[in-house]
Image 1: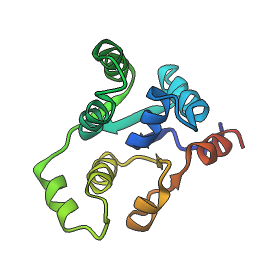
Image 2: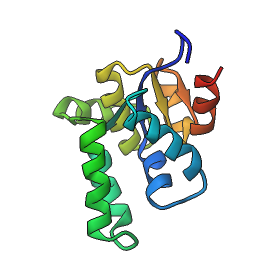
Image 3: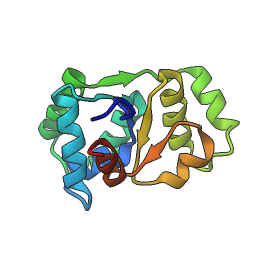
Image 4: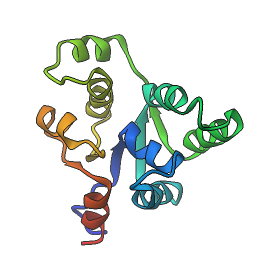
Length: 143
């Protein structure tokens, strides 16, 4: 990594779901998560992310596995709180996706260096923070 490499990143829910559900993109998600576990990166996610993951995976992932994943998040990553001001900002945002607007509010408040998402169109137009797909981010940090 060079001096211009983002080291404080926000992970969108879909990147975490790629890993948990072994979806397309799981390899890149795992590499990024491992860099967080190794403390090469400071990985942030919003509290709403854990709620959304629990809801989305409720029929396909056991409670034990889900809680194991959440314990890892608590041990290695920063879980950012969601506030009433985040909700206010999100309902007044031009972002068409409320959940993404909430995550973006958390990322902005945490002053992250970059956002990593599989859905750039729900983030990039609404922030000055650089937004990368997982593959783009991995390419960026190996420059």
